[in-house]
Amino acid sequence: MTRDEALAKAATQWWETASDHEIVRFQLYEPLLCMPFGRYHEAVEAVLGRPVFTHEFVKPEALRDELEGRREPLDPLDSLRQLVLEEKIVVIDPGADHPRSAPADEAGS
Image 1: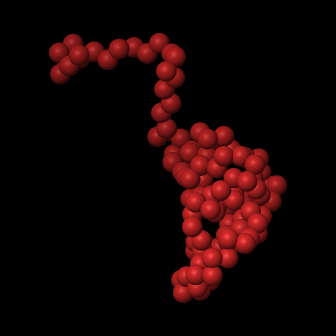
Image 2: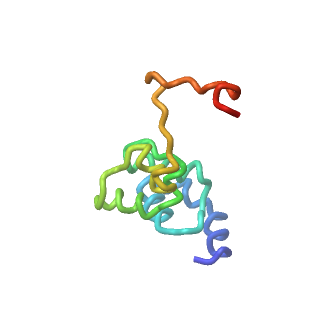
């Protein structure tokens, strides 16, 4: 679909009469957004039956695989790992006992 075709489709406001399944079956396979993102997001959540985080839309192939039953949904942390290298993710357990950082004069600075 070209940009002009996507704009023309959006101008019809086709999503207003489409079911969640119809929206997802079309828009999840079309790289150009042809409707308001909020309505698309709502439809994906309804069809997949779970909260879908906005960063998951960066890799629509993962959502397609889930829709088509080729994979289970990822937990939120795993879905973030798809976007960045694992060594860049830092998880801090607020209930854990963390060592206090030494003041600059104690750290030798």
